[in-house]
Length: 166
Image (cartoon, rainbow, N blue to C red):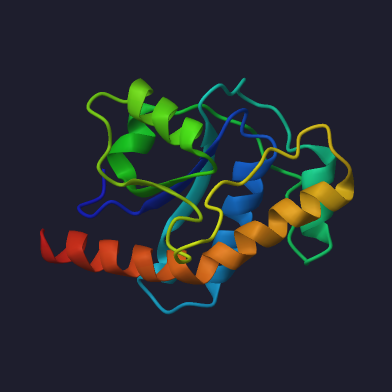
């Protein structure tokens, strides 16, 4: 385990639609940052994931339209190793946050909604596009992209606090 938690984990239900897209988008955004942010690990997990599943076709297509490759994604569930290394969890909905807090004992203090830091009056839930058309997946992607600048600042502050607590 690293001295300072160095992983950002995005959480949804099956880890085949929303959280893989969120992780890939966030990884892309972190690549434009300076160290130490650019060296953080980014992954995704599902509260009810069947391990080894590919990302949904529409998730792959929605990210391909913005130049991000999601073809090699394999789903995974939550694990103690993820919890031990995680600087922050970002969940898609209140129910994911509740399930994360239920499945992990004790509940992690570093779990949030992906859209909770955008500002007051903004819908902080990211609806499940599963079974929907590509346009619904693109809307889902765009709602994630809107949250990324605020998440970078949250992660920066969490990393600084964790590093100074060593």
